[in-house]
Length: 266
Image (cartoon, rainbow, N blue to C red; front, side):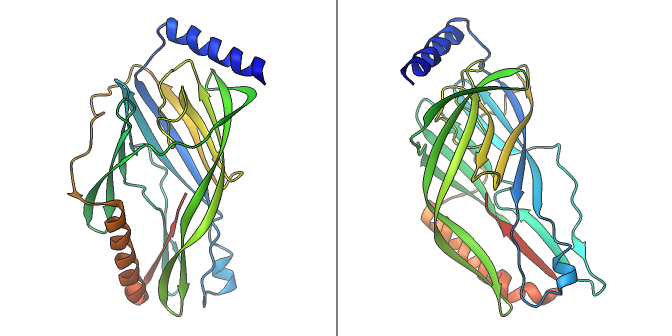
């Protein structure tokens, strides 16, 4: 293991000394596995529900900063519908969010969409304890290193009970695998920005429960948009969570109007 760490840092110094690219754009595809049951839904309809949901994100990086947002290259998705007109729409929570990270100051500024309003939440990079495994691979022609970590915290579970949408926080320990490249020595990525010494090209959470896969890297892209988002009301993370709870309760009361929405959380 000592030899692996020594080789890793020698490689880091080599790439840094050679002045590798430090700006660009990465397109990621996010795949989230869905585990959905709905009381009162016919088995035939439930069997038609998809087992996964895909969308795409872009990450711009420049001047030791990054900006993550929804990509224009989206995968079209049509709602499921039965003969009675019931439509079921699937959304990945945070699909329209914008996240700015400053790697120098450690500041994270997120623009979060909730209902018809936008909010601005300021936080700091929450670093995990990463371990190098010594494994290497090649992704999009970039040599990559494998790192693993655990995230101990809570996640939100949404269920429908007697016509009401209910949300509850449950304990959650996530197993995280990340592949990053020192050829682009910028700690950007689709998640866990500012935590590894190179660009993250692949993230696997809980053995495939959520996967972020880089589809393309362009180190000559226009990165002028890399700046903190400002569109929205400034709010604390706790206050935003309270607003989420209120919205979900309202959705539960109104869901009988002909459509149901299931949110999944990566």
